[in-house]
Image (tube, rainbow, N blue to C red; front, side):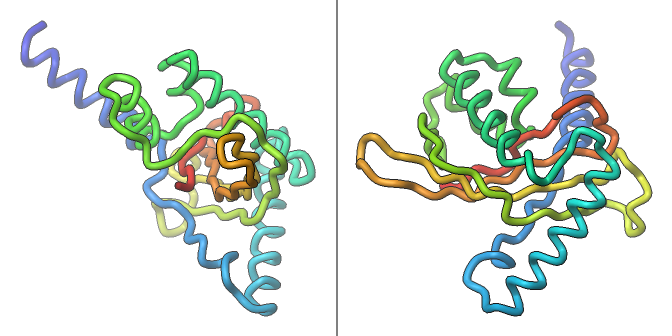
Length: 185
C-alpha cells in the first residue's frame, strides 16, 4: 500500500471518528455532592432533555432507558470477552474504542474495570449539546445520558458504583444506537 493511500485512509478514519463521537462528556459534579436546590435543578434539566430526546428518537423512553443502558453494557462486556472489534466499534465511542482496542492488542491496562453482574442501573442525568451555537445541525448534536451502574464485585464481595455515559447523535435514527462514551474507573 502506498503512502498516499495510507494517508487517505488515515484522513478518512480521523474524519469519521470526529463525526461519530462527541468531544465533551457532561460534568458529573452537577449530580454528585450537591444540595437540595442543585438536585432540583438537575432533575428539571434532565426531564426537559429527556422530553426533547423522546421527541427526536421515537425509540427513547425515560422509563425504559435503564434497561437499554444495562443491555448495552452487557453487549460491550460480551464483545470485549470475545475480542470482537467490530461490535466494540458499534457500541463504544471512538476514544473509548481506541483504549479498549489497545488493551486487546498490546495488553495496555484499561483505566476502568468491567464487571459481570449488574445489580441496578439508574438514569441520573440527561444533557444535549452541539458543536454549533444554535444546535441546528443534527450530525453535530449529541444527547448524553449519565447512568449510575451498581455492580456486584465477586472478587471483593461488595457493590461497586460507576457513573457511565451513553451518547447518541441526532442523525442516528436507527433503533437504539447508543454508544458508551465514558466508563468510570
